[in-house]
Image (cartoon, rainbow, N blue to C red; front, side):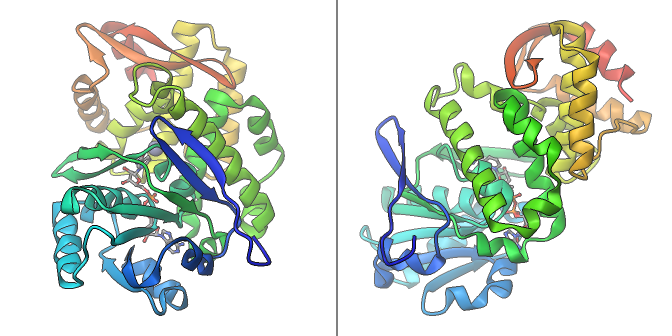
Length: 350
Ligand SMILES: NC(=O)c1ccc[n+]([C@@H]2O[C@H](COP(=O)([O-])OP(=O)(O)OC[C@H]3O[C@@H](n4cnc5c(N)ncnc54)[C@H](O)[C@@H]3O)[C@@H](O)[C@H]2O)c1
Ligand SMILES: [Zn+2]
């Protein structure tokens, strides 16, 4: 995007075209929106660490972290929009990780019954996952993403210089989703990740840029083929059933929990779907290579609590559970597993 030209890659969803500007410059935002009628939403960490980028923009700064992804944050945005005299012509831009883009998309969708919005994702997870697919929302107490809406942003602007200040642990978190994408859809990317290391991506904007774009393509393809999650889109939940349960009970970062969930799901794939142990070992080795935990060595109390959470999972259907399993690396499907079998496998994980 040099020499003033700014050409998007177009992602077509049902009823909505999203323009993605890869390898762009934050300053190009001025070419996409009118500065006077645009309000940015970000969090304190990003605002502090990337202060110069926000100069001259009206900006709402929220507290950082999942615990603030709530109605109070939405109320704060709405209060400030009123103070800023925002109207139906106003434009919101969420500049942040998944927490910020989820809240911004939701607030923009309800303010005056919906104003336009765009995203500048700043974390790896935000770039490859949260900002794509139109799901926006907030948590209610312990219930994650309980309230929300499906509405796509007008654009996604990727400026990889944001990643210069992204904490190392957040890089690791994001790679859990990238490895997930490899497991369910892209064995070639899986092999490339095996050959490289996290460091290769951390030090090179070209490397991380092309990996991000590849992962946006993967998520886009899956979502576009099944926007309302009746089939294919469920595959994106790979590793997330046990992952989410353990995230809450063992209070792990999302990426760590998903890593453990991916291992558990690989072992379940061995037991019920003919996935080979050799392939599980490959998945384990790759997660480990990207500094993610792979052991399920929690105490009995945590395991018991996790099992109870699993029993309340939305994917439970009577005495069975719909579970995303691997057929092979790069290919996944949804299979039913009986709660009895799941119980047995779950408690034998280590
Ligand atoms: N909408 C969806 O489809 C979807 C998909 C996956 C995840 N999500 C949501 O995404 C959220 C997780 O996203 P996340 O991991 O990006 O969390 P996050 O937004 O909390 O960001 C993680 C941390 O990194 C900091 N940060 C982000 N970018 C930074 C930068 N460039 N420099 C310095 N610090 C930076 C943030 O302040 C925060 O402390 C969850 O709420 C999850 O529910 C949504
Ligand atoms: Zn996830």
